[in-house]
Length: 291
Image 1 (cartoon, rainbow, N blue to C red):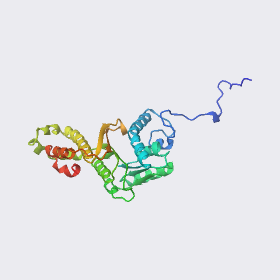
Image 2: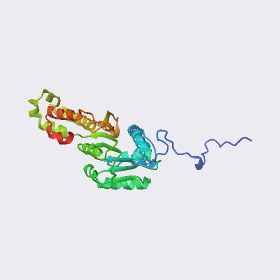
Image 3: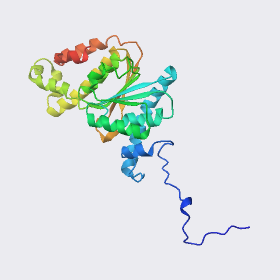
Image 4: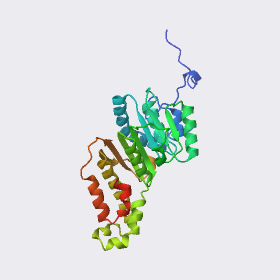
């Protein structure tokens, strides 16, 4: 017997209505979290801007996920410390996409602003993310904190401003981290010393022409900072990869540094650091990089 078709213009019963499906969103992701991150609108929709944000999140995740999987496979557990965590967007995304479905692994968000730490704790409880911890301490203080394990597997620092990235590197050394993932930001220290020593540098080396103009001082100082950081990581037995992270948080600071500990230091890395600092009249920075 043929079924009766509903008359034209007749609305379907409410029970048959289906929620909006977004093929861009990975199965099992927390919709509430995506709303908190402003990737989904409050009514659960994706617009052009939020689609771009989602693409950026997945682009970042594709770099970090293999590192987490490798550690978890080898050790059966995983500890990740995110420095300068802010609202802990990175930690929440990593937990939601990778650790939520697993029985092991802990994310530690380290942030000095107490109000952001309190907000992250509340959100983790609301989302039922029990293996997320948040510490209201500086990066330097976290090295000595008893709330963190003696060893941390993965250290991240995304847009940790100025010398906070260097503190995160020192934290990674102290905690014998297997992987370090950095997106440096606002590197002002080296540029400041270049500017301070500019007149003396003119008589020392023609290379000072590279940073003679103020805009070049800033740009060269930023690039030099990251080059010194890479050498420092290599001197401590890390294999370093530098690439571009496009569009994360709509920032122009898109340099992504990924370091894997191999236990085989680059033999001349520290010598190179010393030579660069001497050549560019930056000896004041020896305690920052030549250690």
